[in-house]
Picture 1 (cartoon, rainbow, N blue to C red):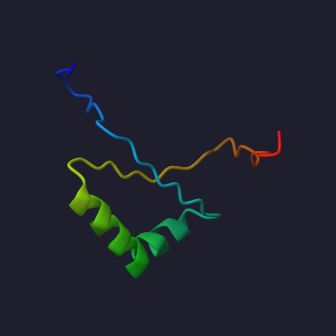
Picture 2: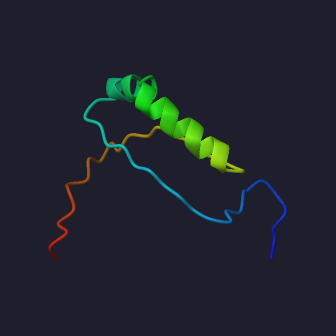
Amino acid sequence: MERKGKVHIAKFDFAILIEVTTLEAINTIKNSEGYKKMELAIKTASTFTHIIAASNVRRINPVNHNK
C-alpha cells in the first residue's frame, strides 16, 4: 500500500553509520575520496537517498554486545 504525502516510504532500507569523535571530523570524512566514491555508488544504485549528519548531546555509552 503506497501512502501519499510528505513522508517517503522506503522499498528497502540501507544504513551506514560513521562514528566520529568531533563534529569537525564530519567535513574531513565527507570531503575524502573514499567517502565520495561510496556516496556516488550508493546514489547511482538508488532511487532515493537521505544523508544526515547528527550529534548525540546525551553521549550514550558504548553498547555491550556480549549481553
